[in-house]
Length: 522
Image (tube, rainbow, N blue to C red; front, side):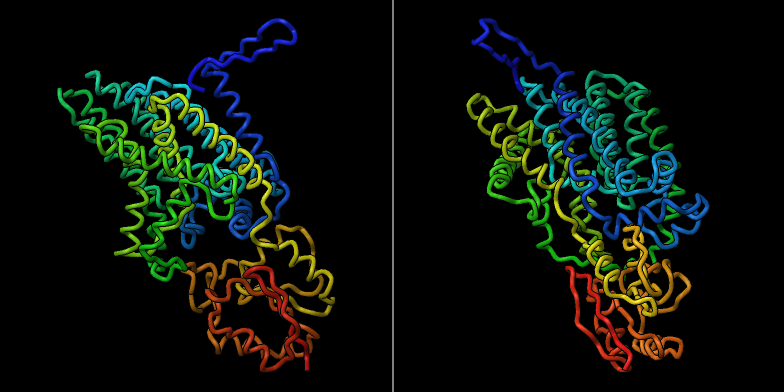
């Protein structure tokens, strides 16, 4: 990818020259990213988080912007976009997931443009290798493939962050030439930063790193009055446009202390997995790619540390490792917020640094071997991840209930939000389906909030006993209790214990952390 390639056909007596140009490279990688993300898109039922997005997208805009922020951590922008997408393309699993596919594929050409700017600021002499490998890593990244196949806000966050980085590098180059930065570059940085802030509640960490990365170049001598004016104007505009979002997400900060997330320093080891290959996708082949990427990460860190002054590499390093470090500090001293998928946007600067490390190598043989090792082993890994089985087998649960539940029985779903992925299956269950304590969201029910989310309320032992001994269910032949993540929502098994006091428990069926137990009338 660092020079023109030639495909020879000696049997026909002539040569066919196929020169690798930036445009051809971009088109090929865009189609590769699309092919990987479309693979297996319809093979899995929606899991819980996807079902949340699907349910939110059915609500009115008034609900999304006035009611949803009272219990949902993410800003309502993504769900509003998903609602519009649903109106145009439908609400089945493939249609809802396709917006993430589009966002993920759109990131590839923007990333190539970022690599081009990075090459101008920190030349390697091999721009095609740098851009091609960075875009290939993004196209076949197991983590990005997973996220780009789910209707969640992360692909929007990644595209927005990549756009902001493009604007930042363009401005850094223009500042270095003594300019004030053209308005197009300021617009890219401002719009990308704003969209990053509105894409996720932790977008503020990314925005802070973008500001810190730009600051040394912005303040660099010789001073330029127009540069300061434009920077201040864009900064004020970004902050002013973010204030409504800040008000929305801060409205539910009071229950973050009961978040299901936990923190320990060894969680930082997740970063190594994030920036190479996730454990669930690790095979003998992908381990080669993971090892090569780990070696390049070490080389990139070492070369950046040895460089002089503030440069594009150091900016990229801050954009890469800044958000995880901020998340770790907040988790250690305030509330747990450290979660690998929320840091997925930092894969973009990470891949740029990895690609830059190999592009700078003066050993042509080393470049070929390492690039081939990454590409040959990561490509099948990407398709394997795209064809992965569902992590939550709501389809098997639905089929089991359909076979075993009678018309006079009741199905209790605890917690109540378990009804959403079951509804997404599209199969009508026999009997009466009853979310416990009441249909999602359980905002008006007074009970323990064990997951930091008032939309999913648990029961106290007394409340569980009241539900189990309710005269209205005395004559129900069987109550099929479906529980999910009981260690979080019912750590003392209050609901099963209450039902066991008045009914006879049957055989438990399990699918991971999803369980169903029948309780028969005595």
